[in-house]
Each structure stands twice: as structure tokens, then as C-alpha cells.
Length: 91
Image (cartoon, rainbow, N blue to C red; front, side):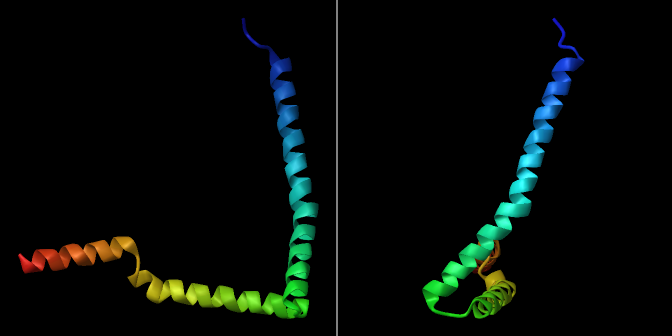
């Protein structure tokens, strides 16, 4: 019992409807939700909204700098390699 092209067409229509729904959410609801969240955060911290944005950018820059600096030496795989090398050196 083979399914004909009608089955494939209805499946394709369902996929297109889902993609349209996801794109609508991503294009309209997500930016609104992000603006609302940053506005509420600024209000909760009693700070101007542009200051919240610039502070967020500063925090992201600090986290990236930490991850590229100290964070690399704290990598569990790198630490395990160092411990194995020291253990081999003692024996």
C-alpha cells in the first residue's frame, strides 16, 4: 500500500506552516520580548535602559576575556593532561 503524492503534499504544507509560524515568532515576538525584558531589568535596577545595554556589553566583553585568558588554563581536559604529566614525572 503505497502512499501517493497527496500524502507528500499535505506533509509539505504542514512543514511550510510550521516554518511560517516559527519565522513569525522569531521576527515579531522575540524582539518585542527582548525589549520588554531589558526595559523591566532597567526598571528593576533603577537604571536608564541604554546604560543596561552598555553594561551588558561590558559584562560580555569581560567574560570573553576571562574565558580566553584564565579560563583556558582551567579547562578540565588541560588540567587532566597536566596532572598526568606530573604523575608520570614522579614515577
